[in-house]
Every structure is written in C-alpha cells, then in structure tokens.
Amino acid sequence: MIERSSDERIALQIPDDDLILPFQAENADVFGRLVKLGPTVDTILSQHAYPEPVSRLLGEAVALTALLGAALKSEGKFILQASTDGPIDLLVADYEVPGRLRGYARFSAERVAELADEGETALLGNGHLAMTIDRGSETERYQGVVPLEGESLTEAADTYFRQSEQLPTFIRLAVAKHYRAGQPSGSPWTWRAGGLLVQKLTSEGGHGSSGPLSIDEEDWTRARMLAETVEDHELLDPMLPPERLLYRLFHEEQVRAYRAIPLDSYCSCSRERVEDLLQRFTREELDEMIVDGKIWVTCEFCNSRYHFDSDTIPEA
Image (cartoon, rainbow, N blue to C red; front, side):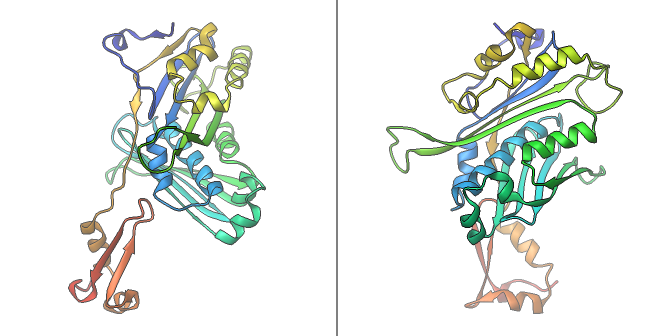
C-alpha cells in the first residue's frame, strides 16, 4: 500500500474525483501531483458551446493549471494564459486557493473548423505561454513566460521548467468525453480530464526552484520512465482511485501520498462587479455599448449575461 506521512494517517479520506493528490516517491527522490477532474472540468467546458477541439485544449489548460497552481500553499491565484496567432488565439485558466478553477477560450470558428483534424499545435500556432502567481495586492506578481513555437501546452511548460527553473519535470495531460449510462437528464457524455506532474526534488529536500539541484541521473531517469508508462485512460478513468494509480506507477519507489486538495469550478462575476466595471467608462463609451436601450455584458468565464438600463449607470 502507499505510505503516508504520520499526520495524514488519521482519518485521511481521498476522494475519487475532482482532486489534486500530492505525492513523493522517496527512493527516486521525486515529488509529484496527480489531478483527476470530472464534474469540475465538465462544468467549465459545458458552459460554452465550444467546438470539441477547443474544449479539449481548454480542458488541458485547466488540468495543467491545477497541477501547477496547487504549489500555492496559502492565499493567492495561479493564472495560465496562452496568446497565439493560431485559430485559438487566447486560452486562460486560473486556480484560486484552496482549489477553485475556471477557464475560457477565444477562437476563430472558421479557422478551427479548417484545422480541427491537425492537432493541438496547429490550433495554437505561435505565441507565448505566460504563468503568473498573484498573491494579492500587497505582494508583487511573479510571471514566467515561455515561447509557443508549434508546441503543445505540455511541451511549453516542460521547456519553462527545464530552461527557466532548471528543474527536471515530467507532465502528462489527458482530456476526453466520457459516456455515463443512465443519466436522468441531459447528454450522457461528460468531459473528463487528468494529469500527472513529476519533478526532481532539490538538494534541500524541497520541491521548487530555489537552491541548486543535486541530481542523481539514474534515479530521475528511472522515475521518468515509470511516469511515462501512465496511460490516458488511467488518468481519465472515474473508477480508478488515485491512490491505486500512484501505486501502479511508483510502488517500487516507496510512494507516499499527502492530503488531497478538493477541486471545484467557480466564477467571481456578479451583477455588482459588472456594474462597478461599467462605472469606469465615460458617458460616450457607454452610449456606444447600448443595444435596444440596454447594455449587455457577458462573462467570458461562466457565460452569464447581465443587462443594464443605460440611464441607471452613473458616469465615471
């Protein structure tokens, strides 16, 4: 069985879905996270009538954001943003402590239809991937940027950790529709996503970018080879408990699971927030937004629509 730290052995219950499970494979001296997403990613993707290739790519972005954002231990937000010249010119996903996720995509429907069979890299094109840590107004933001040059999100993130952080990293993402028979209403097809991240520990025993790395190449090669055996269906299977998957992959490396982080979807929009935003515009700018006597605002994340009578919004 998977070993656990002493403070996790008391009443540790790991959910089977919508979670991030941190772990450590002690013999190989690596740290990692496993993410499994069911209703959370389905809610995020189903809020928009995205074409399937767009939903699949946004699902990858959400899973990757969960894997990286979970490094935040206290308040704060991790934001992943891909800006490109491809059919999907903008992907945004963010993770807010303690485990809330959201995301959206902007794209050209015509260009996506033309390249739908060409794969992720064709849909993204060239641009950059930005990863931002925002710990609040009292703390300066940290941002890392890596070029997107015909690469997938996974490859771009791997390049960032290898070049900027000098941290050996393995990342695998999987997104697909899952058939659930016997649904009381709606479509039996729901979106699922999963991901695995494995990183070499630093010489100080932590898992981050600070301090020089003490790399045992043999241990890292072995751990990476084990991680590479993970199959997409294992990351997506709702019937496969996360602990069991970790045991399959790393049981020879004395794998230790830590407390799981539950995940859920969210959106911070509200009528009050939108009204506050509109009050920052001049009267001339507000007049240009009027359609049939009203101003309509749609949230890019959750697709909620708000309307306001133009004469009820005070000028900036």
